[in-house]
Image (tube, rainbow over all chains, first blue to last red; front, top):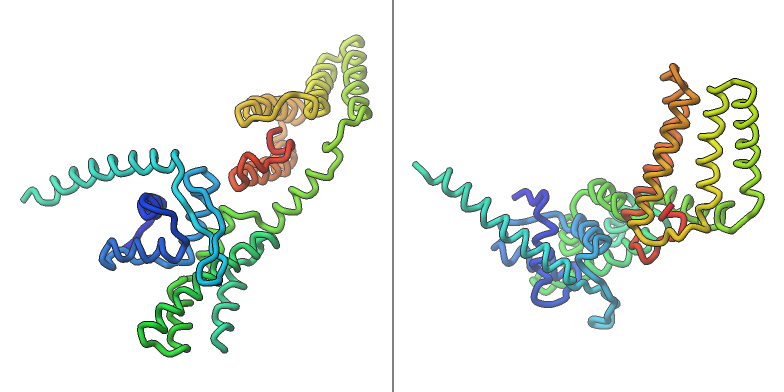
Length: 103
Length: 205
């Protein structure tokens, strides 16, 4: 399924509970959508950099299994944007469901 | 093609025209991602070759990744421009920078005094903008909001000077405007890509 425009919101959701590195973020999105939302992982990092430039996520480096990994955590403004996106999505989703399931 | 060759080819295309620092950053994060993907595939019973191919395939089209990276990371051209602005003529306070606006101001007053209002006002407009640029490094412009106000004044001046000097000739106006627009676009792009904390003074102006 095409993720155009929704990937930043899904990344913020993936980081809501705890910081993760890029690979874990990609896995989390795929698992939570039960494989429906599949995307090319090469586009995940540009989206992460954009979120970082916009101040919605912060990054830091940490060792994992002897390998240096960049971890991302959601910032305060990122949480606010996620809450707003969630509310908007619920509203749009409810409206589309009303239209499509009318008959 | 060897196993790492697939990843190398992907990285080469995905990092085309990115700055050296950006290329290193992409390489580090994609290699770590690739290793995690390979480990998981190998844990699931795939052969080394299958794991390699699956890990690279999951990254998708390197051309699309390159387009996405160029929107958020510094390109080699932008990095060069940033170096130039950091070490260029505007980076220090130099009294001689005031010489040009002073000379233009004197010439403008002289033209007005001799009755040539068009040349007089054009030169006075030019002198005011040049004075603005010459004083830029002494002005307390070090927050994004003040930067926006300063740039609005600078753009107004540029529009006025272009309109005055190129009056009636669209060809001349476009010829002179596009290099300015190109520089403005590049600076805008740099402002989007760099965190405010890393902005050199030039990016506020």
